[in-house]
Length: 632
Image 1 (tube, rainbow, N blue to C red):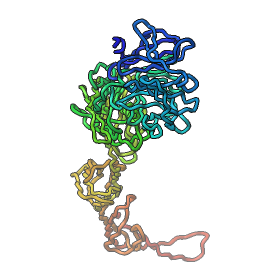
Image 2: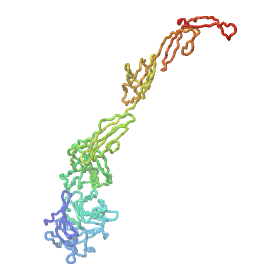
Image 3: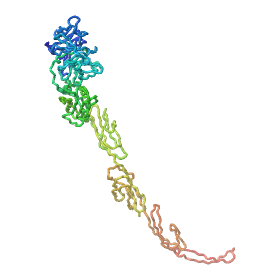
């Protein structure tokens, strides 16, 4: 066998009119290709089990038949000629596959509406129609694990067909593939239940080599190309069936620096709280439909419940359970392919919601289970968590406010800082009248967020006032009243000046007490102690009492008989002791006792004669003189 037959794959580049070789690398995670030989004719290449690279040709000059390509000298020679009369018009086929023993199966391009299968026997030269499959071909015929497959595309049908050469009518569609994909080549791969194809996405016109699953029809891109190509050939078509192991690789080409099936993700900190758990090039090989995939946080988890697995979107056919916990489960809701699980995995994030995440490595384990009960290897995403310096935020102590007043909090000034209060405010300061706990988180572009908590408690506002007498007489008691609206008992101390203090316990509502001051006295509330926490307003703390005198006087009065004395309300002419009660200008009682003594009158009589020249007769008149004898 020619040493060049050992290449992984060969295909014909129509744009450059050359045969190219294709190499897969990293378990089908990447590929590269390069030209081998230039040939002008468009060909469908296929290998025979003995390593001969063939193509069916009908040259204008020369024999019609199978031509072998010598890639060392870039030339062709006739491998086996056929009688043109054996070949149905037009004189060519489009797709070929060698199954050994000189037998080649062939089909023609489906645009002609032909789903017929022919057998080309290079032992007898006979070309035989085997029958119709019911599925028009749109790709190479590929031999894989001894079975023949091809891609079909027609209205309502798109997928991989399993060809039954013994009875083509028994051929079946084994997997559905979205009709947006067209295949320019199809052959075997070294991986379990997987073909390799050249694919064109008609929605984007992107062209790429892809792995095609015979389990669920998943089309997984390997690498892109920019040319038109036709036909693929590989000696893998004659290889022994590969061991079917369920494998998962989170970073197929190891571009993250992790080896094996693992992945090194990005750094997590308070500035970037989430990280991917898989690279773009996830690879999965499996023995049955994927039933479930789990993603969990394991190992060193210093931030506890703040370390979670979340998902940022939804993929049709994939159910999600455990979102926002340390283990996320993706389940097949029906018909989800491995590519759907990979799409969902690309939406999964490790998240650390701690205010300042604890530094250290984290491990995220990913594993899937198939419908047959098989389990994949455990692939690990490694995530480094770094600590950043936090902002120092201080709201001060908890605040106890009086009913009807407000509390003021200041989170501090941080240039470029963003403020988020538990109350919904987004300012540096807030004023509130509501009880409760207030939490502020301050963040900026260079530090971890800082937070602080303070509580507001409102206590009752009670008022206390001292009222009562303001004026009394020195022979009266003073009444004072403590007025309060406290709903619970209070203790009040009152200082009398001059005098001793008063202490009243269990005062509720209005409470009156008396005192007997002997002089002007000022009563002052010196302290109020509530039985429960409360704010106290003393609306009238002082009560001054003026003490005015009352009077008791005695007077002796001597009058002459017939005279009278004014006793405040009346004239008195009789001797005796008279008690009269009066009020002072301040309303104080005054008792005046008056003792009246009657003095006797002295009678003097004078008789004299007078003569008046003008008078006629004699006049005699008595003259009485009343005198106080003591003045005589």
